[in-house]
Figure: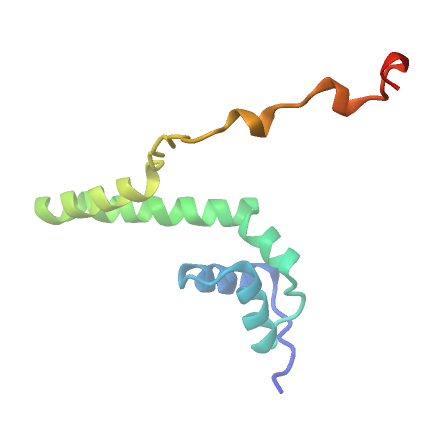
Length: 122
């Protein structure tokens, strides 16, 4: 049984970001950190940590460092990694979805289905 690690918010954030970069979901991160003995690592805590201002600043700083490293590297390597970063940062295009088949009956609502029947139809 692992002992509880009393680590600061920055320590939890660092470990949560490390696990997130390895592809774990928030619930998997919470479970893994609980198994490792961290205190206060519920799903909500992990979600709050990863979506907070500190995490955003940390990621922005890492991106700035990566861009600096790319800038000072040789031309072929610079272009290769610049393209990879652009792929990650650019929003993906969504393909339009063609709706085929009978769609109209799904959206038909008759007025006589909604309210009480008029007295002359009784």
